[in-house]
Length: 149
Image (tube, rainbow, N blue to C red; front, top):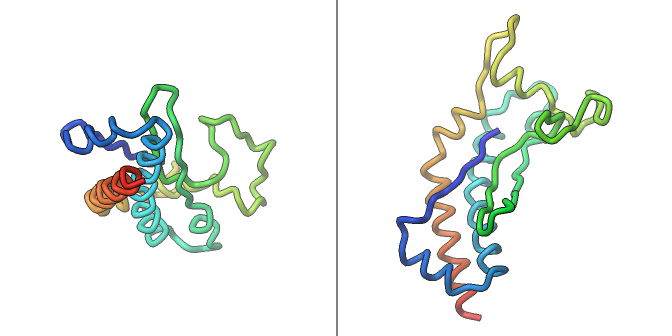
């Protein structure tokens, strides 16, 4: 899965504006900005995903996670299905479930018997800069909205 983290430390004006906001407003601004950037990546992943049953395309989602550390919010493009990192197993989500596209790993990375057909990494490589621009633009817009209240 691709997770994008943006470092805004070089953007002093935005950093000062973020400090002026409350913690809740700050989190909302960061969440909106990272989700906007991840949506750009999601569109490209869906466009590049192979279509056989359509299950892969239907299960590409944007997930936002808040870190336990203050001020860290990340959004990423995930493909729903069995996830070893979060503890889902084949016992809880069967392969016949339409929300389980567990096989994306085999398509992306290949197997011993199948060559890889990457669609996530190329999507990230092509749209990375555009996603960053969209995230920064959305952040500026969200900051302006929060400060105008």
